[in-house]
Each structure stands twice: as structure tokens, then as C-alpha cells.
Image 1: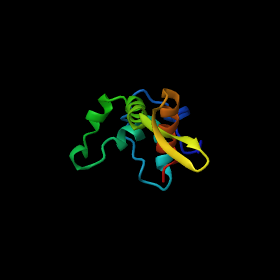
Image 2: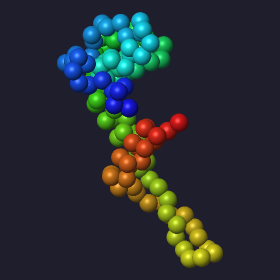
Image 3: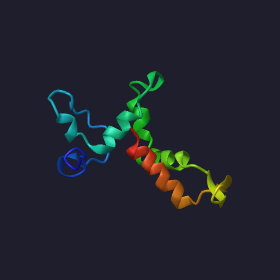
Image 4: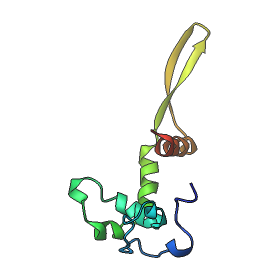
Length: 110
């Protein structure tokens, strides 16, 4: 993974807009700065297509933080009862568990 996450050396950039041609050769997109790749992925779906200057103004790391915050479950269920008679009871989820579940949903989902 560390070969494809470009954050050091030549890829260390302040702005996520380098105007580099990373699709010319095979695997050259691996040298694209990570922040620029995040900004480019925010241009998905037809209405946002080609609006890179709009995505440059948005902090892509903040978008990732908001995604983790919004995707964590607020409520879960636990088992109450013994042996044969078990029923579900709704319970609140702690903030740490919300972050853990959200990150696992984002990074390990297929």
C-alpha cells in the first residue's frame, strides 16, 4: 500500500491541483499526490464533473472526517435474557464505537 500512497518527496504538495498528466503511462497515477486524488474523487457524479476548482476549495481531509462522523451508527441492539428467551433491546452507541464501525465500513467494505 505504501507504494501507492504518494505523500513524500516529489508528491508533497500544498495545493491539490498540480495539472500533472498522471494517466499517460501505466501506474503513473501512483505518483499523484494523495490530496489531489481525494480532490479528484470529489468530482464524481455528473453534476460535479469537471469542477476541480470547487473541490480544491474544500478540504478533502475534512470531507473524510465528515464521512466518518455521518456514517457511524447512533443506535444498536443488545441481547437481553437468558438461554432460550432472548429479546433485543435498543441501546445508544458510544462515540469510540461509532468511529470504529464507520472506519471499518469505509475502509473494509467491498
